[in-house]
Length: 249
Image (cartoon, rainbow, N blue to C red):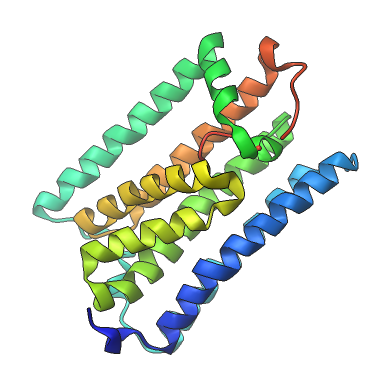
């Protein structure tokens, strides 16, 4: 462990992602439930838009600070220069994208699959899109999460923690912090999101680029939104409204 690599910027990144983001997420989830209980018709849309702004401001702010400090761009892995064996994780990621899309289509077409989705939603049900407009905005939010959260966690956070503990321990650390960032989903959501974070981290480290993980992340979240929307409109779900959804990152 090289504690000399833990500078003020790295400490600030850790505080923001370990403390600020989880607390803001919990506050936002509570506010959404309060708005919903009060009958605010645009509760979810307002929440989606707030999260969109927060994610872009956070990601671009961290990137801007990184560049302003004169740090090299290479550790952020923003490029697409795949070579040799790096194409293997890219291919595996492409296969996972296809499998995810296929599984979501199968689940949406199967009442039993939708029932399973419904049971797995947990604390995310309040955030799940109810109508076509909410579903469209949720799709934009999913793409934003895919881009911005990968920049924040597998980009900047991994880049500041790897020099301290090494790349593979940093993968574990960043995945745990990624899970913590979804504390509003409850303990189960933190665990599931952390495990998904390990997958995104492996894809990033092995391919040398954030882009495959960005695509996979966005597809997983888009699929989650579509399945939640379908599950809430399935016959068995008609009389069963709010409380929290599958692990959307």
